[in-house]
Length: 163
Image 1 (cartoon, rainbow, N blue to C red):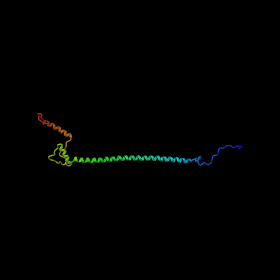
Image 2 (cartoon, one colour):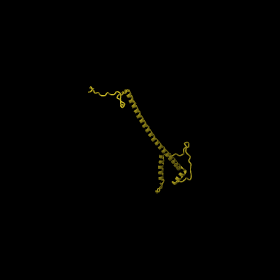
Image 3 (tube, rainbow, N blue to C red):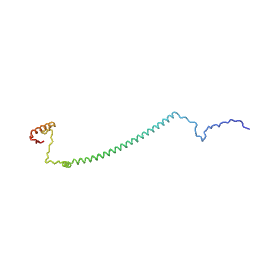
Image 4 (spheres, one colour):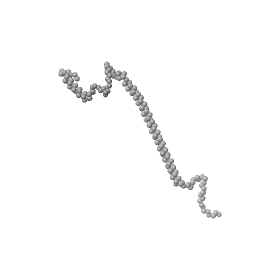
């Protein structure tokens, strides 16, 4: 005989999760204030990171500029030392050229001779002006023109006048 009729039903879901099933079906909805605070915290952390990166690049750039400036300063110091050496050499050369023996040798090489007598002149002062005055260029030209006329009249008529 057959058993009375029973309705077939699906197995009932278990109320407790099985040990192998670690999924959670229900979650607590986070508070909107907490979500906003977390977002702001993440944004602030990212902003600090970006500013720190820019700061690091700025420090590196400043270091590079300082290194280049130091190289330029070193080059200028080297050039200044070379120029000081050159100045010392030129001073030695000037001292040698200004030496009385060198001046005398250069004068003799150009055909100059030493004078037989040396006359020392006393400097004039305003209290004791010289007895003769130096003519201005226009007066000197007028006198030379007048002298040229008087020498032409005094020259012989045979055409053998000296210049």
